[in-house]
Amino acid sequence: METLEYRFENGTRALPAQPQVVGVVGSGNLEVLIESAPQGGACTIEIKTAAIGFGPTWQAVMQDFHQRWQLADARIAINDMGATPAVVSLRLDQAVETMLVSAP
Image (cartoon, rainbow, N blue to C red; front, side, top):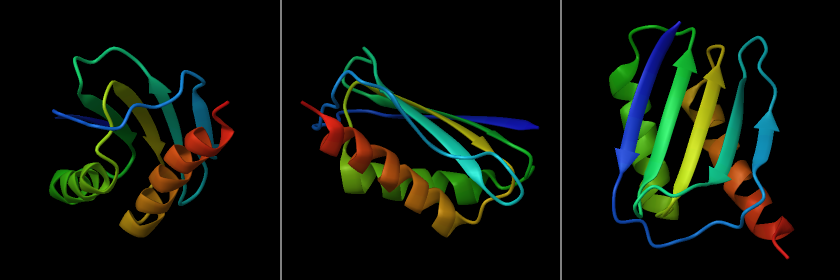
């Protein structure tokens, strides 16, 4: 397993307090846990992946995600078993959208 960590500063969109989990860790898939947490206005992302050596690809996908959502004070944990970049993006968007829709 490889662990990758990213931090994106100066987010502008806060999330509701209720954490969300989307996806299932399994063959070719991943699980995303997203929660609101004090991060000094940043969004932190920790990825645990079985696909070793794909740091540049992960970084590109995370930068794209941050540009779309601009999350502030958010913590994201990803457990990956070899999902494609498209599936990663889909699950991340699903997690944020689920949080925003379920907010009171």
